[in-house]
Image 1: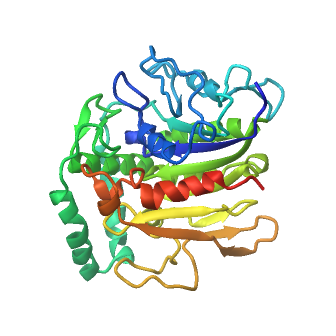
Image 2: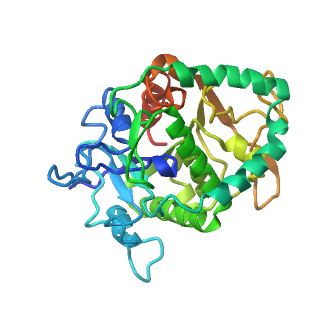
Amino acid sequence: MVNQTLTCLVTLHGIGFQHPPQGQTPGYADILHANLRRYLDATQLSADPLYRPDTPSSSHGPIYVQSCWPAGSHRREAGLARLGVWVRDSPHQIDTSQAPLSNGKGSIVHIALVYSDIEENRGHLIPTLNASTMLLSSLFNYISPLGVTRFLKRVVPPLISTPKAPPHASLLGTYPSLRTNKEQTGRFAILQQLQTDVAAYVSTNEQRERIRSFVLDAILRLASRDDVGRIILNAHSNGTVIAFDVLRLLPQYAREKIAGLITAGSPLRKYVTFFRWGRDIECDFPIAHWLNFWDDHDPVADPLAPPLSWRRETPIPKHGDHLFVHIDPYTGHDRAMDIYDIQVDNLRFSSPGGLQAHNYWDNERQFILPLTKLLLTPLP
């Protein structure tokens, strides 16, 4: 096979929403892949070259990389080996002989990360209480009392009135829960899962570090491959927080291959305001091509360019400080991170059902097309 220079689209959702293909149920990134297929043909977007129709966990689309393989085994290396195997005593060298990414036709490959080492739904009460206490103590730094009322009037009606979607019509319509191994349906089940994910990530350091180490290892393996020219990290919901955390940990050789960051439905502003998450990015490189998609009806999402002092329900300033700051570790100089906020209307352009305002991957006009354009941008 000819050694191609590949663009890797790495997709990461919130932890409770990640799942590989299971029997007749598609994986969480399959619908996104199918929507990309509307604009990228087989000579552009590759399918998993190891696809086997007789294997329930196989996908004729994204390459699913699981933190544990087989599921429940707690074997980390067996899953990550799908991206290559580290060569002993050779830092940054990866053996890719058994880990093809492309079928030899498409130069864009789609990789979906699945953190599957999740314990059963127990012991979440204390993390939830901790996160709730932090949220309430900082609520009015995020939004005014009058703004709370206006915000609820905007986001609650879609939760009540949005028509029910047919099974598996969209990512956030019907999905299997990793923690309960049961099918979850409905908007409030989705909101509950979002709340559980946030509470666990904010308050449970052990799980947070396991998640970060898995995603970091996956990115490092891709960056070490000779056939990978660039990586575009595509994160949704609480996955945007994980992606942001991991990008700050990358060594220089890996940073050089990060060509873009996509955040959709991101709660990063809430993490900074409510949970005192760091807003300073002290690393060798500023994150390039950061596109943040947000819907004003999405209770999770916010614009990320406005300064920390900005509050919801007030005009977005066109100039001035930004939320995130890049600090050069050599000079100590800081400058605002360039983030391009893109406001979308998922209630109009995404599939109905579930938490529709939070469903960006079905919004072809306002999300899929810009993502496609970035994927097709020639390598520098």
